[in-house]
Structure formats: C-alpha cells, structure tokens
Image (tube, helix red, strand yellow):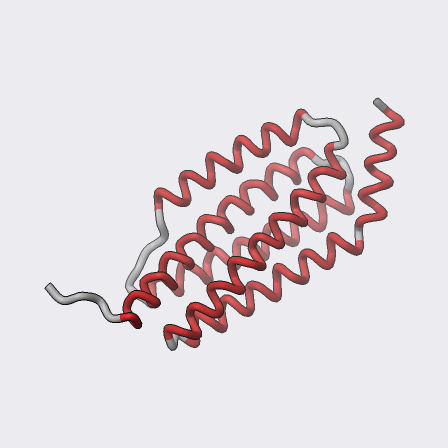
Length: 168
C-alpha cells in the first residue's frame, strides 16, 4: 500500500471542498425558494428569483467539475443540508420581522459562500488545479455581487421591517 503524496492529499481536499460547495449551494437554493414563497415584497421576490437561477447554474458547474475529476457529489452532505434548509425555512416563516431577518440571513449565507469559495480557490491553486480555481473565483464573484445587491436594498428591508412592526 502506497501512501498518498502531499499533492494527492491537497487534491483530495479540493474534492471535499467541491462537494461541500455543492451541498451548500443546494441548501442555499432550498432556502432561497422557501424565502421566495414567504415574502410578499415584489422587489425581494425578484431578487430571490435571480439568485435562485444563479444558484442553479452554480450547482451545474460544480457537478460538471466533480465529474471532470472523476468524482460525484456527496449524497450525505446534500441530504444533511436539505434538512437544515427545511428547518430554517420553517423557523423563518414563524418569526417576527420576517423580511428584515430573511435579508440578514441571506447576507450572512452569501458571506459563508464567499469564504468557502475563497478557500477552494486557494486550495485548488495549491493543487495545480487551475480549472477548479477559476470556477471558485467565478462563483465567489457572483456571491460577492449578490451580497452587494442586498447591501443596496438595506433601506428597503428596514422599511419592510418597520411596516411589519406597525402592522403587528
């Protein structure tokens, strides 16, 4: 039995990060779709629809990259994250100040994804896997743009939050 080289260990970690990224994107998609069903605000609903389409694209890109590496998505990670998204959506539906807190959660999720893709980009570069590094950079830029869209809508979310407070 031969021991894996350091390079093989780094590439194995790249695959695990790709699988984690796929699971996180699946959880994000499930959450986005749940938020879209809950929100009554057309502007937020439209932003969520655009982000859902982008997230579907990310899932396909990650699946293709894993296939190119001779790997598959992680069914265990995908299932765990689907369950977490379902619990999160149920909790979000029942809480007060729904629109403001949903925006906050979307912003936090975008930054978790940004961090994941930053790590994946750097790991892939160390492994000499430029295709994965480029993919991670592309998706990270998309997530950064999404976070900026939320920032541009903060005042709108505050208005929605205040309107909800006045109604309740």
